Length: 175
Image: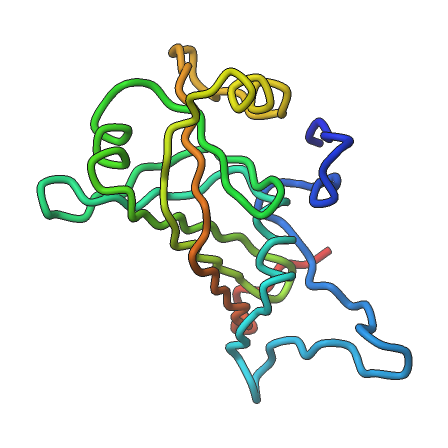
């Protein structure tokens, strides 16, 4: 389980990457959202479900451009207040996000009967003011490695898209 940040409406307990689709009714009397199945194996997710999935996930891949070539880096991140926050050290990933601030972050996971994938495209910027750094330090974003990571990069989304994909019979998990 993850530590919860009390001021964020987007934090809830989770198991990283393993989520179930929402089965709530958006309006009284309305049917639940559709789930992927054999007749409709790929469903586009709305922004709310995309954010719910990102909030319940900590591992993603950051896509940047290095010398006009795409590069992917595994990162742990925090989805908070409709933004993404990454904690990193000096290096190629940070330099690339600084030189070309257009980035993408992709995260995915699975439930018992489906896979999901969410891609956030946005603008990266390094947090610099004391207030921004203090707010970031108060959040539950900690490095997974023993290296010192003192730089916070915020991704402000310009777009978010997601899909839920039904698993074929032999790939489904049993409870």
